[in-house]
Length: 119
Image 1 (cartoon, rainbow, N blue to C red):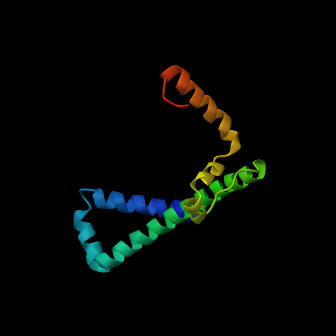
Image 2: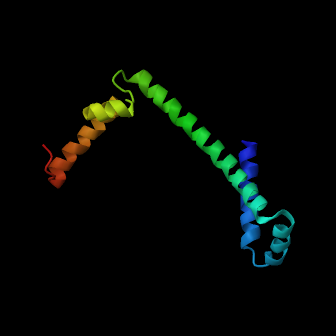
Image 3: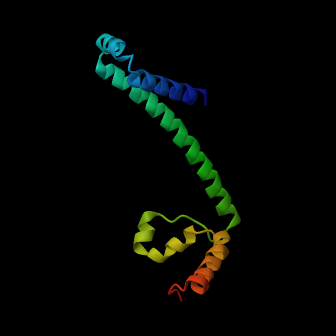
């Protein structure tokens, strides 16, 4: 977590440095010293580290939710793309049964109050 905070801090410092109207002259010397390719590489590495850690934590969070839904609902599973291509109606099993009741209430409310042409 500390790595991501430092990476974000460096990115914001570099952006503030680039966008500052007074930093233009010093920025030319920085480019001359390390070269634009090296500077772009350093910024790119910081971005990769920051977003890599963020998406890893996001993946673990949604993976935990997916495991809980699989444990609670016997009909819930995420089919592979090849299975969906062969048999498209199987996609309904991706929707957990906990959401079926709110979906039905929404459909009934739309039919009654809005008059949408749902069966």
